[in-house]
Image 1 (spheres, each protein chain N blue to C red):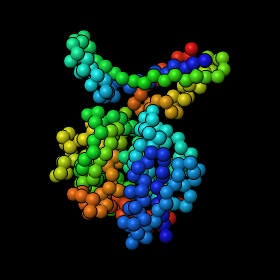
Image 2: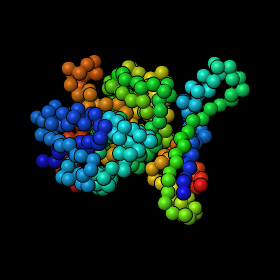
Image 3: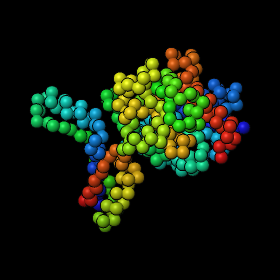
Image 4: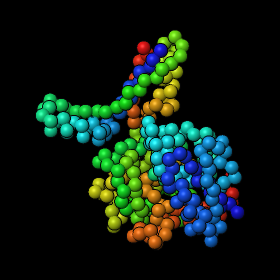
Length: 79
Length: 240
């Protein structure tokens, strides 16, 4: 099984990287860009075949290490 | 003699020897001693105070301090903190203590996205901590900063303010806390904080680089933090 984890900055947390990318997209002529937020994508290869158990385990991993819940949200998908 | 400091060394620490130099050499005449503690140790041993130094522990992979926060020695560091032992985290050490849950909040990318290496001023305030109680509240001192991820964030900063847990605040050369004096976008100009008990302190500026006049314009203002720790250890007897 594979877990896909999406880590994103909470709304309200300043994202200077996203702002810099947004500004550069504007300079490249993309006028419709209203905002850019940059996060992380993590793939975790897992043993076992129980998606529910895997989701619980990966959620624990996110809370303990992969995300900093002071400033980040995360979403887990199991494939 | 309760003046023995442990300096924790992680792979990628690079201010560990500077910190050790302060206790072993600069403050030797005051009876201070120190030793390096390797991150794979499971005990901090018989130390009276702990210094978590700056650097790029574990290459700052994932997030600054995130991997180091789970190093084998950290369980013992947490026990030392819980027992009231004085701990100071400097720069990457501050990030590690936040990631380990010993200090609240988080340190994120500087607002400018740049690595900033320069001298700043910060004002000492808040409640008395082992590392600040000898410095008169309101005094401002010059220290260097050198970081890319020093922008302090906290979901409820008003509570920290209310509990007087803000210990260091970026200010200008005259001691005024202004947005221009904020180098990295930290909320409320916060440069350093303490935990709820006051014994764990973290800050982004480097006091250990401002302990000897030979090191530049900042002079030896940073020494006050370590002298304060020595005095509080002397007054309290052994920390544990």
